[in-house]
Structure formats: structure tokens, C-alpha cells
Length: 390
Length: 245
Ligand SMILES: Nc1ncnc2c1ncn2[C@@H]1O[C@H](COP(=O)(O)OP(=O)(O)O)[C@@H](O)[C@H]1O
Ligand SMILES: [Mg+2]
Image (tube, rainbow over all chains, first blue to last red):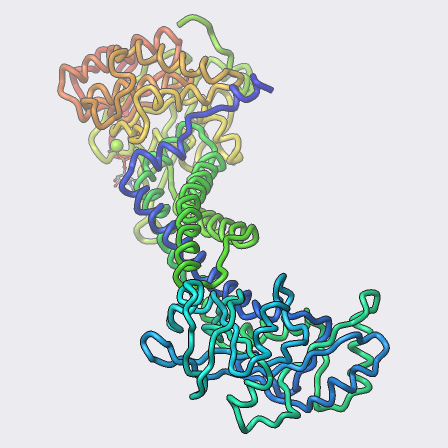
């Protein structure tokens, strides 16, 4: 095995061809790295958007949910009769329900006095709403009229609520033109649709939006017996309830929301397009570099052919050049990607993370980009006529 | 040179009568161009080169010397006539056969054609790397041996960029010989050199080829080196003139 290796070992021609022209190598790597960063950024934002759009959905304490069939997404929820939730209670597997109001209200930053829309959920403080360790103790504070729980991960534009609250200050501001007081902090996270989140009691909610009918809700949470089959119950509820509500499993609700961002808006498309753009730009740069590299060394390649080196051997050299470029360009792109994700997480509070799927996808895209460029550059080599070098 | 390395991929000799010849050219003609531009550059050339023989090919510029060399070197497709290299016919030969034959033919070009990204030693090793069944270090030792043979032991790790014209041509000779060819084709190897260096290079080439009993066909303009040859061939307008050697 060892001796076989030594017999097969050759001068690392691909590496020497690249490294003896440091400037060109640098340009190539900068190009690949740039393309990689662009792809990491675009795909990161896309995935971050999809994940962030369901941070609230994920935390809901529910097995099934009821929504209006006219609701398109979390940013445009339509009401349906609260009675439907009570009707669902009749099913033997249903053990609990929570009616929820869901809308965007105008929040005034108590520091700068500027206003901004915030997603507000109204619920009965004694009901279950979120899966959160000390949620019940926090939600009890909402039994007092005019109290809200503020999402501490909300964007900074809503004001230094978290800081003031932790300092023990009484944080009061205007919500939908009425005075409210922050009675606690929760941790949900903003998304592309909502920059921040608020929880309040239904009583306060109905006071904030006076023209809401008390019998109308935007979301109904249903909890089932632990041993029940969610899919079956959802089906039987769909069959028994009128057509003015839609029954979804919690996973289906998450998927429904993600799907909205994915298909009904151009946001997913734009980010995918951005990533594709990075791919194309990178491909053009790598192709240019490899093509001029092969062209510059054409007499040398022809000399090697005249010496008796096989065309396949030389094509292998170009291939290895492509492979080396891919590896050397990917590593800095990966590291920069990690740093940029950290930066974005800190400044926008979006859940953008480097996952295996993304890092592998981009590695293979870069590898494909380099190998395809190498393949095209090889055409130049195949055209090389060893007879022309004399 | 310490040990002789047998060429395992040597092409089988077909008939005993031609095995004394390194090269046998038979009624070879060649044309360039298409249609009205089609022009004959080689006209029914016949010649032989014996094993170990040193042959010079002279003639005015444009008479077809390089074309003949590239045909013998299996770099060009034969149009009419035939060439045998060590008894193996080139006409209608496969790409694979031609590539294997090229491994037994060393080539030295007018421009040295060294790989710019490789040191002198690595350039020569590109030649010895063609030998089969040798470890990496053995092939590197071969490269060093040949560089010493051409007097460049102090310049092994220099890039072609840092070598003089004569030194580059020496590296090219070492590279050609490192693949242990039985036939060496050289196209005006001294053209870019001053006369003293040119003379040195030719003497060196002749000496080393003799040691290896390697046949040499060298194209030259240079009148002062004609005396090194065993035989002198002259060409004019694509025709071989009657031998004077
Ligand atoms: N690839 C080619 N295509 C067309 N004509 C060529 C080509 N190579 C050489 N020639 C022509 O063939 C003739 C012989 O060229 P060459 O063999 O290079 O001559 P020499 O080496 O003796 O100077 C010249 O007239 C040259 O112009
Ligand atoms: Mg010529």
C-alpha cells in the first residue's frame, strides 16, 4: 500500500500551477469566497425568515388549531365565531381550548414617542397559551386591566422596555391610543412580519380594538388527550364543524405560515434569486480564471502531451485545480458566513444559524461551480495541438 | 548513470529486418491547407536512422524540416507514406499507440518550453515521472542525476525565470533524457543561444546520447556544429537531397 502510494505520487502540478501565480489565485479565491458569502447570506436570510415566521406558532400550547379559511398568514388573520371552539369541545378527545385574538396594534416607543406596529395576542389569562416554564405566573399579571407582557426579543425600535422593566421602573406607554403598563417580559423573537410581540388579556384587547365583536376570535387552540390521534381528530372535527373554520394540526399551522412566505410572497424567491446570482457571479469568475490559466499554460500542456503524458492526465490536473479552488475558497466563505450570521443575529434578532444542510449545500454548489468551470476550461486543452509547439 | 531501467511499455517489434532502425521513413508526403491553398510541404521523403546514430538535418527555412520532425514524433497525422518507429508503424495507429510511442521519443524544442511553475528539478522530474514502477524518491534522484549530468547541480531549485537561455536548454535536455528515450528529436535547440553556448549544448547532447545509445535527429541552421554528426541530411523545398555524408 505504502509503496503503491510512492509509485503513484507525482509532482503536485495543480497546486504549483495555482500557487506560483499568487495574485491570480487570490483573485480566484476572493471571487469564490464572495460568491460563497453571498449564497450563505441569501439562503441564511431565507431560512431565517421561514423559521422566524413561526417562532410564536412553535410555542403555542396546542395540538390542533382553528383558523378562518380566509386567513392567509400571521400578518392577515381573519376572525371566525368563537362558538366553533366550544363546539369542538364536544369531541371526546378534546381536553382543553383557548380562544385567542391576533392583530397588529400601534405601539408608541416611550422613549422617542415614535410609533410602530406590534403583533398583539389577546387571551384569557387563566387559559393556556404558550409552552413556557413560568408562563402561568406571568399571565396572572394580565388579570389586571390594561396590562401587557412584552417580548424582550422585540426590535430595539420599540424602546428600552426590557432594560427599564429590569431596572424596576414602571413602564407605561400608549397602545392603539390607550394607556397600557408592561407587567412582565416573555421571550418569543421578531420575524419578517412582526418586529415585536405583545400578550394581553382579551378584556384589554377588546378595549383596545373596540369594534371587535366579543364573539369573534382569530385563533382557537385545542389540546387533546395525550393518546389521541391528532390527524384523526382533525379530520372528524373538520367533518363536524361548519365551513367557516379550518382545522389544522399545530405542525400544519406552522407549515401553513411558512408556506405563505415561501409561495405567496416574492421574499423566498428574491433570496433564492440572490443566492443564484452569487452562484453565477462565482462561476463566471472561476471560469475566467481557469480558462486564462489553461490558455497561458497551453504551450506547456502541449509540451507534456508531446512528452507522452496522456490527455486524461492533463485533464485531471485541471480538475484538481478546480477542486483545490473549491476547498480553498469555501473555507474562508464558511468562516465569514458564521461571522455574518452572528452579526445579523445580534442586530436583527433573526434566528439565522449555520446548519449542516446549508453548509453542505453551499459547499456542493461551490464545488459544482469550480468543477463545471474546470470542465469548460478543458475544452481549450482538448483543442491544444502538440504539433504547434515546435 | 547507475542502473539501466528497462522500458516495460516498449512497443513490440514487428519484423526483424527493421529493428536495426530507430526510424524508417518511407515515401512520406505531406500537405498543408485546404482547397486552392493546399500546398505540398514534404515530397516523397525516404530515410532511416539507425539505433544510436546522430543525424543532422539542415536546410533553408520553410523547407519542411519541422513538419518532418513532428510527423516522426507522432504529433501529426500522416497523410501519405509511412513512418516506423522502432518497427512500429505510425500510419493508422491508434491514439493510445501514438501516446505510448511518444514516451520513447525525447523532444527538445527551439523554445525550451519548460513549465514556468516548476523548478529545474521538478521540470526534469516531469520526464522521469514517465518511467513506470519507480518510487517518488527514485524518480527525483533520476532528475537530480540528469541535472548533474548537464552541469546544473547548483541550480536545481531555481525557476526557469531565473535561469539563462543556455541553462534552460540544458534543463530541457535533462528533461528529455530523464524519460530514457531511445530516440531524441531536437528542433534547432541552439537557435536562441550564442555560438559558444550553442556549441557546448550540442557537444553535451551528443555525449549524453552516445552514453545512452540514443538515436538523435537534430534540425539545425548552424554551420559550425555540422561536424558532430554521424551523418548529414539536407532538405530543400520538401525534398531530401542526395546524401553527402
Ligand atoms: N500548421 C501549418 N499550417 C499551414 N502551413 C504550415 C503549417 N506549419 C508549417 N506550414 C508551412 O509549411 C512549410 C514548412 O514549414 P516548416 O516545416 O516549419 O519549415 P522549417 O522548419 O524547415 O522552417 C512552410 O512554408 C510553412 O509556412
Ligand atoms: Mg522549423
